[in-house]
Image 1 (tube, rainbow, N blue to C red):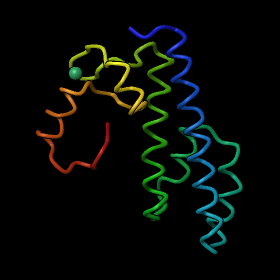
Image 2 (image 1 turned 180 degrees about the horizontal axis):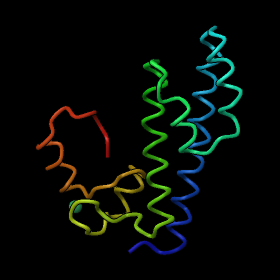
Image 3 (image 1 turned 135 degrees about the horizontal axis):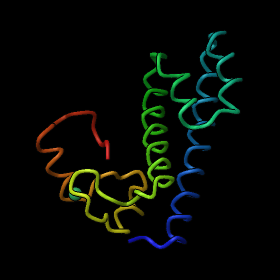
Amino acid sequence: MLTETQVREFKKLLDDRFYELREEVRQELLRTDDQTYIELAGQVHDLGEASVADLLVDLQLAEIDKHIREIRDVDAALLRIAAGRYGICKDCKSIIVVERLRAYPTAKRCHRCQISHEHNYPGSGGPSM
Ligand SMILES: [Zn+2]
């Protein structure tokens, strides 16, 4: 099991990643020259994970879409932390090794289950952990 300190470290990592992603999304919106998007950029600034994803979910911008998916992954990981389920594989319920979490803080499966998931659903949305 992860220690409380480790969980706090991962939470910090995920929070930082979220702020980074939100800023990138904001910059991309500002770059579009589209008044609607530029107004959205102003709102994005103060929102939390789930709200940002919801606000932008209908935008058909490929670059932003990728970020939104990652924001959702970050959001889900933070929810698992809040629920005390962070670092537990969603398929087999075993503990995800800390090295894997360091490499993929949003990982929701252990390595073994991830491989069989990708085997069962080839090409289903790329590197979704
Ligand atoms: Zn597993």
